[in-house]
Length: 485
Image (cartoon, rainbow, N blue to C red):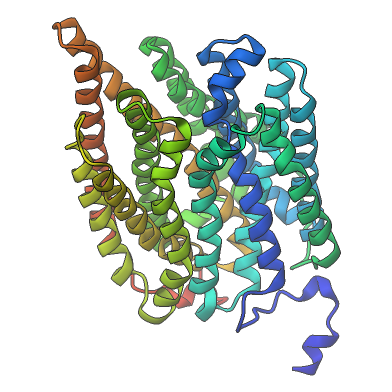
């Protein structure tokens, strides 16, 4: 044991058992702040339209561009995290985030604000895989569930809290205040992080394949952008962009496979050879689609049809989001004791039941019922995400952690965009066709929402089926040396 203490900080990648390592705590805090920003703009759209004299479609770009940037940048992070030290990656991520936030506060026009959001998103894109990769290196396998529970708290509660928090902040001032509140908090976290953060593992020197970078940005960015265009109504154009994105992704995949044989791939697809990781990836993507679909539909229903203010709608979904966050650590402990399947299967069933409940929404459904259904959905997701992340990354050998995290993050963005596009397209198409038949606007919208929730139920049944394929625990041989090379 003493020899371990004499090791230089850069090599302290020996998993520590016991409490959550301080490095992970710091990274969780930083990740919480940067992810909160992905959804903080949703409620500010009416304010922005007034202040900057822009249309709603234009204002939506502040959220779309954030997702697009994440989808384009995350594929590069697997390579980037292997090249630079932990401190270097952290300084890059938080530096970009602070620069973007500061620029947003003083943005004189929409264009500058959009650029600021893109800079913010670039920092966020580095932060998530950095957190996951570091966690897998410094936490012993038997404690991973518990620590991952704390991480999922940051990753799941932050986007859920964004709209509610921004609703509160907007009562006190303009949209600039959203960024002004975040900036000092992020600055303090950055300073604390750089003071305490130690390097984990050794950076490897490898060349970057710029052709792959371009393909990843075009492919994943194009796919997410095309999916976001489905809401505009020009289905042909959107489908064309999606097809082009998929074509670029196909070329990207072939390029990575050839680089794996000689050279260093931007995204190492050998992670997909581990069955548990691949199953976890599919499950996470489908669950994410269902979750984001409902996160979009509920506020629309509560504000547009039931006439609640943004703040009231935010407060109604707050208990569910908090329940999800507070349950994360408990779910993690249960996972460490009983394995994953015990949690994921009931979790997936809870998701299905709550979405089935939402297919019954009406103009008079009591608010307590909506609150209860939303809480059930969030609890189901809490029981699903932590085990899935832990099992998935645990099935990959350590030298592939950075790539495993980056593939996971990329697919999360794509699934989010896909889920959103799917529910909005289904809802709008159904509502339009009913209006054409002479149905009143509110009734048509309501029916469109019900149908969109039915799509969610179908997705959640796929989650249950996938959950049955997961093992109870990560394949321990994968963590060994003789496996997966």
